[in-house]
Image (cartoon, rainbow, N blue to C red; front, side, top):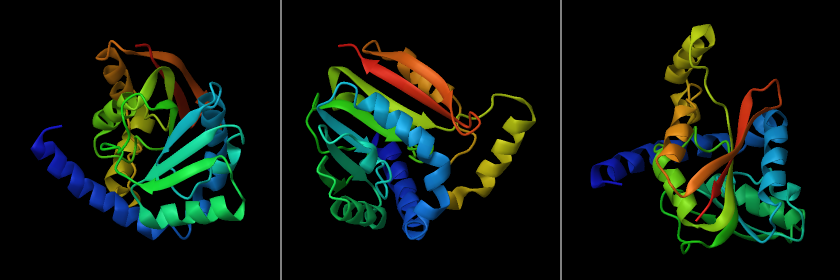
Length: 219
């Protein structure tokens, strides 16, 4: 990432932090139900291999209880208020599978290369200012043979829904979310990487609103 892009990303990260600091007290109430199927699907895919799993954008920790007790999960998030709620959840529910929770920027992860068996990032790419840089960093910390598991709303490519999503995107800056997020962001990134391949892409509940993607690091 160039220095100019990094400075822009830092400014946008500050905006996202501010937005999610406001959302932290009511986030679970607002989003737990609609996003639960996607979180369950992402967790199920990520923990198939077992081992050490990185949960990027862990937020308030809604998916942490969904992980089996025989895996180890490290959660990171840019928002400290959200992360404090995840810490309380892990303590109150005695989630022994949670190995650590850290405030961290997804484009600058403080982990060595090839460290995790899987990376799960539900509902993250529509929030981060630079999705490609985030994906690069997730790939860096992933072991060969491991998978990045993503869940996101993928915007319509044309028609009235695409127009509505574009309009909503202009009105939803305070949410830290881009409803018009195109599949090309992921597809182009995978196509440019000889070490990554798309394993699965499928719509999930509710009503196919979200898309699950599994991306394997092959070397």
